[in-house]
Every structure is written in C-alpha cells, then in structure tokens.
Image 1 (cartoon, rainbow, N blue to C red):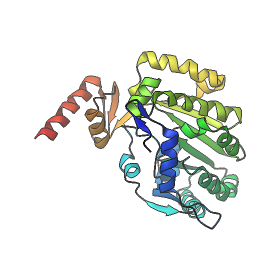
Image 2: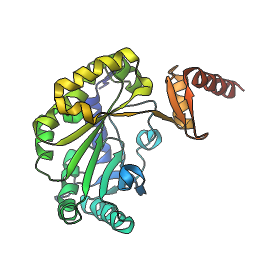
Image 3: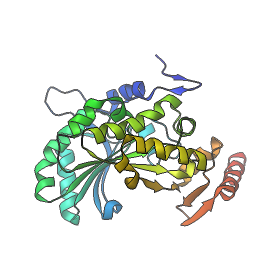
Image 4: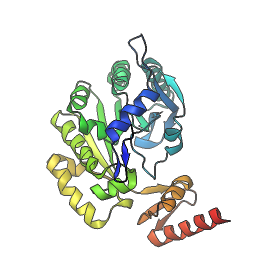
Length: 280
C-alpha cells in the first residue's frame, strides 16, 4: 500500500512502517531498537546522547538523513541504551541525557523502558532526560503524553518544521494537514504537566508565517511563549545539496564548513555552484 500522494505522505502510516524495521518483537519484555551512535555532545552545556535511527518525516535539511534513509546502526535493548548513556554521563560529568537523531518516539514503549532504567540515576544525580522529537506522534496520541507525565525529570523539545502548513509540507514532504499535530503535541504535554518547549528553525519561515505561528503556540498555553527556541539552519554540505535540488533556499543559514553566516542570495549562489558540479 502506498501512503504518498502528490500532496505528500501520511507520517502516521510511515511511522508504522518504519517501526517494523527499527524495533524488534522479542519473547523478552525488553524492546530492542536501532541506534547508530552514542556520544558525548556539547548541547545543553554537555549531554550524553543516543542517536536513534529511523524517522517518519523526510526533512530536506536533516543532519541525520543518511542514517535514517539507510536505517544504519544496530539494535540495543533499553538496558544497553541506559547503561551506555549513564556511562557517558559519569565519564564527562554531564547532568543531561538525551535521545536525538531520527524520531525517538518511534517504538514509543522502548523509550519508556529506557526511562525506567534511568529513573534512579536521574534522581540521584539530579540529572534531566531530554526527549528530542518532531512531535507528530505525541500530537496524534494523548496517551503518549500521559505516559511521559508519569516520569520525573523528563522534558521534551519539539522541533517544529516550518511555521505554516505549506512550509511544513515543502520541508518534510508530509501532507500539510499534519503540521497541526506538532502544535497538538505541545498542548498535550502541557495538559499533562510535562515540561516542553518548541524549537523553530526560522531559516525556512517567512516573517508572515512566523508572526502567525506564535499566537497559535500561545493558544496551546500562555507559558509556552517565553520558552520558544529560535534556531538557524546549519548548512552541512549534504543538506545543502538536497535543498538546492529541491529549489529551497533558507533566508539565513550557518555554513558549517566555512563557519560563517550566509543570507538568501549567497545560498542561491551556492546552489548554482552545486548545479555546475553536477553538470560537469
């Protein structure tokens, strides 16, 4: 069955397909899931990070595109994931543990099993677990938000793709109507008392769409406005090529390999260079 149309695909159905490939059904109670990397990272002033494999969106500027597209990595049980994260946190003195990479909420009950294994560590070390997600599944299922509310010291960062339905579709390839699930995720988590903040990559938003998005977020809960994180697109070469191929130019970006800022016209000039390389 095909879930994609000229107007985009259904990310809920894609999630089901991807879950079958990145999570194993076993006779034991633990659910193994695919990860492609465990690492110390500088984010949140230092964090022990697990990069999950697999996603239900196809964001053109994704920094883990290859790992998600090829489903790279190996299967790890929740116990193995927790032990690796705790080891990194101890070795580096970190008080933040996070799962990032693809879409960590795929195989959701694997995440809760990881949290069960981390519970005592988070409490005794006064540490925090950050779940980084696009929010589609949390917006689709209030139950997931309720389950997360049972855990202490857990916060959720929702990376909102685009500032409008149209921008969401253009960036992710998903149907525009699913944009609102990201906002629903914020609302569901707030309703259940889970710490949450939205992060918006404004490089792909127009001024008009950003101005319209902020009141929509405020409707989810007035307290959320002060927590909004605005970020810029980090132009890794592979992501630049994908954006150029799809004729998408961020109005501002950070050229990672050159360590400087590029505005719209300069990015379009980069695209012309990419096009010449492909033609030669």
